[in-house]
Amino acid sequence: MTFLLQTALLARRRILETLRQPIWVFMGMSVPLMYLALFAPLLKPLAGGPGFPGGSVLDVFVPGILALMAFGSGMGAGWIVIGELESGVIERLRVTPASRLALVLGTVLRDVLMFVVPAVLVLVVATPFGFHPHWAGLAILLGLLALLTAACSAGSAALGITLKQIGSLAAVVTGLQLPLTLLAGVLLPLSLGPGWLQGLAHVNPMYYAVEAARELASGTLASAAVAEGFAVMGAAALLAIWWSTHAYRRAMA
Amino acid sequence: MTGSAAAGTTRRTASGGEAAVRVTGLRKSFPGKGGRVEALRGVDLSVPAGQIYGFLGPNGAGKTTALRILTTLLRADAGEVVVAGLDVGSHPAAVRRRIGYVGQRGGADIEATGRENLVLQGRLYGMGRHETERRADELIERLDLAPFCERIARTYSGGQRRRLEVALGIVHRPDVLFLDEPTLGLDPQNRANLWDQLRRLRDAGTTVLLTTHYLDEADRLSDRVAIIDHGLVVAEGTPEELRGRYPAAVTITPRPGFADLAAVAALLGREPLVREARIDGETIRVDLDSATTGMAAIFALLRARGVEVQGVSLREPSLDDVFLHETGRSLRDAGAPPAMEAIAS
Image (cartoon, rainbow over all chains, first blue to last red; front, top):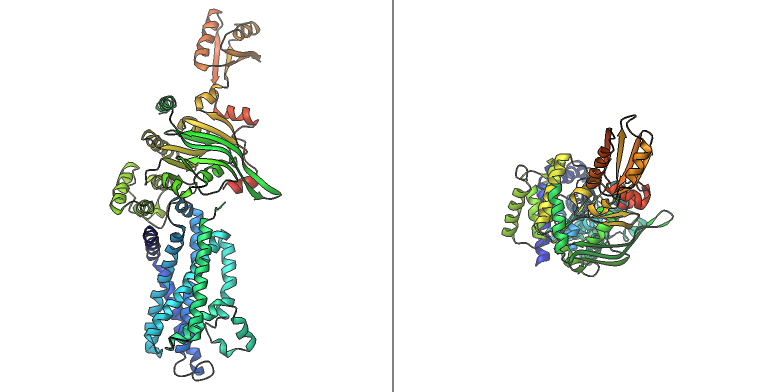
């Protein structure tokens, strides 16, 4: 009970902090919309071809963009954590009896919210342009990708506490970002690629999320890919949250 | 203000009472270049309840490391630490409920208002919503936060922010309040204001433990002082006791031709409160055990001998003399090597 209250209080603090910086809310929404407006049209000629079965290219493209949004919403956590290490906020909170898990989850919940709200907006915007929504599948999809956001948020926070410097964090995160997103097939399905690329993708946890997201978006709710996606993302989120909690708990020099 | 602090000291020392903090054999080392660096090398301390206690020492002496162990932020390598009656190593969560902490970097959430900061802090300590609101109002009034507490803390001046941070440290009415270099970077007015606040807290029964590298902060604010250097307590006691161990230096300049310097120096040397009297050029330098009574005796003697005096200067012992005597260095010059600084910060 205390733990839930603390988590809610800390999430509320984070949400207020975000709402006070509307520029970030605006940026979070504009990036996916730009992909839809400026990149998706390039895919038009591919409709019906390999990798794009059936009707609209958006049916394949939108789930990938959602996965990219989920990834991006989480990865900012480390920057905030480093700022708070420097201003002493984390040290102050660590001297209170607040649960260390609640400290982690407060940020994770805000990041999940900051993924879900723009994601719904993207779905609503994409529908009149030929995206075929299967709302039950999309609801489950948002749940799956929320796990991806949680994993990224907790992982990024843990990295921030461990590395303590913006420069190092930026190097690690940008170093991870390209291979993780490219090898997940967020922009184009990896089934278009050669066998070695598809094989390599199987070591990338995010690949399973994107595969499952495409199935869910097409209305397939029960499939091996969906089960795999949840298993991999669930494990990644748990592992990252454990790591982050451990980082908060551990003595920091 | 100094007078009332001194009165507080005697009253409290006389009343005794149990220790708010007890430290025995505390050790801590950190990995550093060329092996481990010992930040604390066996610290023993006892902080009486209801006093302002100062850790005085240069940067890198180990003050911050000690404070971080006392506040559950760091684990000790060895030794026993009892805060508010509880062992820090085995009951960190229970200790956290009884202590407040104001770190060197402050820790106010600059993206939230002062009031939001206070309310969240209170609620994280398990206080109810109404109780927290009431307490926030009380602290806003007492620490004079009202003019700015509804604004985002990012916009605060240094002194305003520090006041908020002290309020954050005491929202839950802790038994012991720890502050790490609380007046670093404050202007004289804000500094005096913070001293007053800490005295008021002390007078209301809170034990206040602070680190400082300012001599006057240790001397005038603290009821007791532990002088720390290279990870050890080199001296401990009330500022008066510590200073009292060292002589006051009086320099007497007689009018030229009005006295036989050697004869006067010899006479002065026989006075009971005089440790030593020697000739230094045209002046006589006298080391006195007690400045006030000693000066009276010196003047009486000089008048009786008809020595006309051109000038007298008195230098009373300071905590720097204590530090100098114990460590061979002056506190003003004693910085830590860069490697130690990095660990302490």
